[in-house]
Image 1 (cartoon, rainbow, N blue to C red):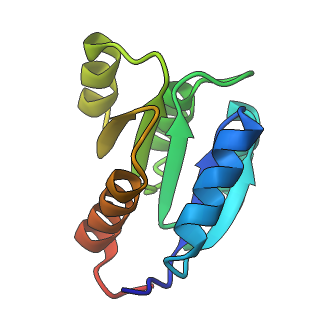
Image 2 (cartoon, rainbow, N blue to C red):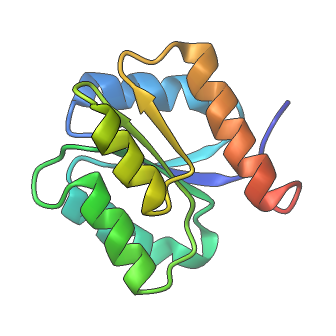
Length: 130
């Protein structure tokens, strides 16, 4: 299944971010990258009308992924978010989901799990509208 959506991958771990970019690019996605929460929020603001999904690391320099999500909600930027974290707790996951995240993944994430969650959120949110 090839998708025609634009997503943001924000993670301060370059190796993890590039691995996700490579994995998800195989789905035909256009991918934007950010290394910090501040960069992620700037991209979300600039690209909000054409951004279909944000994959946010929970812990990043500057603003956390949760800070980014809450700022987007305050500014009514309708970008669905998936969180991932290497040191996730149930409380973190619960808070992120109750704050509007569409999914919360624990690193290391299996490639098929990441692809599946990205497809699911894009399909549920946008269907075939790219």
